[in-house]
Image (tube, rainbow, N blue to C red; front, side, top):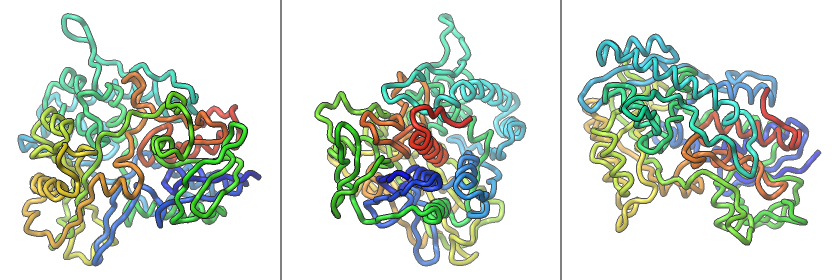
Length: 497
């Protein structure tokens, strides 16, 4: 029985802790804030409830596996899980709208043909066929197997782009794939939105990002009653049931080493001895804040390129009931992908940004049926342009988002009772980073590959969104399975079979 010290109580860290405790280890989690869940947060006021992090769950099989492996109980015994249908509604810049059914490729093809014209669905379906090839080529090395601490072989882009033009060159970015292969600016905008929601500029994101719409449209979108925060609560409860100990309001100030190996932590309360340390904190912060001491920066582990985008989230308490035919999620598209990302690159927000509108039909999130809780999110620069701050810019950006969202919620501004605005600064204060990185993606010369789960310092392991296999709820759960496997089985662990 080993003593395991875990830094942070985010989803990846808790997934690791529960699995290790189930294997018989003594696990203690040290969290600098007063609660668990990391970026999977919640906010409540006057009977209204909101998710402040992700609002939908994809690849629920990951968390089903977690609950079975840590207690032989199905996920659905801990939370109420339902498929969202339609999966999403899209309102394009020209006013065209389309609702995409959940986990139905044929249904998506039909919906696109009906809304955008004959042949649109076929082109999208053919694109998803190529995305499936990219998924099958990269799924195991990028999701299911541990990565070596010294680098990864998964730099080559697996997307089989169509080769057109005089030079017969295929698309090298997701944006190019949309322009060259989809034949309709609205389909290209649809594709770009899957990158934008993860904070990726489709003009520079590798073509392998095609796996993002493929995963969602293949495995579906799911909602947890009470909000995704309820999943974090269930994971925390599972940790407690397995004997994991939590110490909140306890910042870790250092990783103790001896003979070139991690042997514990330093906290405000003193030193903690451990046989292994698992960190769910943002990997850059461990080294930049000297929590892990290395004399030379070239000794630091590889991680994804620094996050340059974040999210503004606007929580809206509305008077008036939610119409019965309302889509759970509507994406209101910007006037143009290039203009939106030119603004973000310059540290600004476009006057009409892409806004995701979440309108869950959940009585647990509203005081009564005469009111509605709505959440708006938009991708923004992590740091605004010089001379401004998020304290100054937040309300103005929220106004732009509300104006854009009225294309999905007519009369929205007249229904607002109150609103709460959360900027990247608020997220950084709560989690240590303005945003969670995107899932691991092949290509881009390895820039979108996260840190390996094993660090250059023996005895120190990485879990959560900054570690393999990257950001996202499902990926956090996968990191827990990988780290626990490496600790329990050692270097011979090769991932799920």
